[in-house]
Amino acid sequence: MSRSPWITGTLLLLAVVVPASLEAEIDCADLRMGQFLCPDPGRRDHIDPKTQQLRGCTKEGKAKVWCLAVDGIVCSETKNGTFTREMPCKWTNGYHFDTALLLSVFLGMFGVDRFYLGYPAIGLLKFCTLGFMFLGQLVDVILIATQVVGPADGSAYVIPFYGPGIAVVRSDNWTYRLPQDNW
Image (tube, rainbow, N blue to C red; front, side):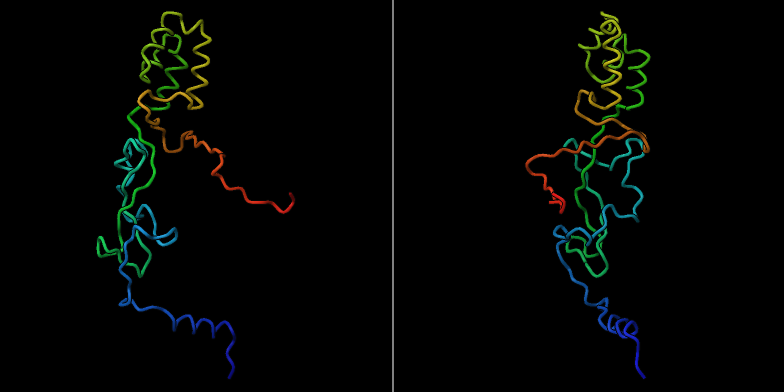
């Protein structure tokens, strides 16, 4: 009786499965993409609901999160399949994007938006000149809406989960460009 190639391949695949007793213990800091999942989906406490960023985000833009290695890998630091890894995040200091934009639209002629963001000199100048005769107010509405002007301490805005987050993509000498066949 002859077997189809699909059944033969399936039987060969089942014969090669590694038993659980042969798990490898390695340093999980050296794992490559596809060998782990960060953050661990089993843990629900990695996102701060107030800032919508990873918990413990530092000014350097890094946060330690728990990750999950694929089956068959045991991490030497924890002796199981979980480990910690630094992930990029946006450090926030409590300045809300929607608050800054609303202050700029309705009270920008008095410089309240700049006082809120931590720029008291420009806020006082806008207050004394009625928002540079309303032209400075219009410019600030555009600059805050496009997130060019942010908080003075260098932090990112707290943006609602489905809000207008902007990620700047730049091309420089380190950017790799794939050649196209029609060039």
